[in-house]
Image (cartoon, rainbow, N blue to C red; front, side, top):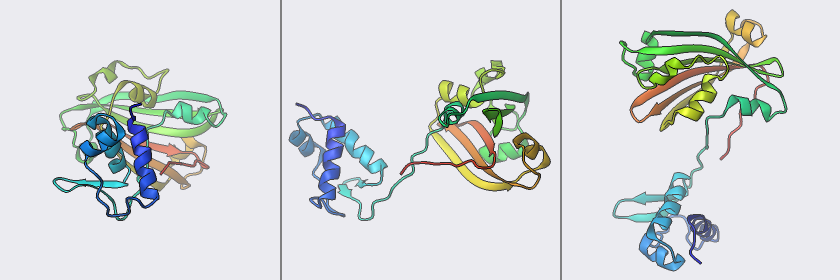
Length: 229
């Protein structure tokens, strides 16, 4: 029976944990491992690449693959569907579009995400509710030069978060998290007081060299973000 890349990955991890391949040890080459596991070299390569991505192994040109002396763990982050996030808590999800406009690229946005000033963006503000309680205010800009089909979407029923996750691939994302002080407007949306601390996330996504979207997400009090290592 031919080994899958998951089988190879699990076996390599097991050997590392048993100190058969201790930190700093060089692993056999892909051809040798493919012969041992009875599989194609490409299968071994996929297993090795995943372990490199997870911070367990390191690969250097002409030096081969070895166990990292100080393995690192990387947080895995996926862009969630806010609808699923809310429904997973047992609450009923409700969405409302606050406003929608096509505008010239603001100067601050052009500088931050390198969209040309002569382009246009779709600016949206949306509210997401959990059982009719404010959950998230979404303030989003979509680059219409990169995603022109977004201009035809009214976003009255389906929010930009859900539409983008399902319709537009991305290759890279920049994320930042902070506590900001609620302006009166943000406080009104989230049913809080002006000046209250608000968990705020800024997320920018890219497809190769093109910016897709930039969003500021403001969460109501009590929000808790979790991720996996």
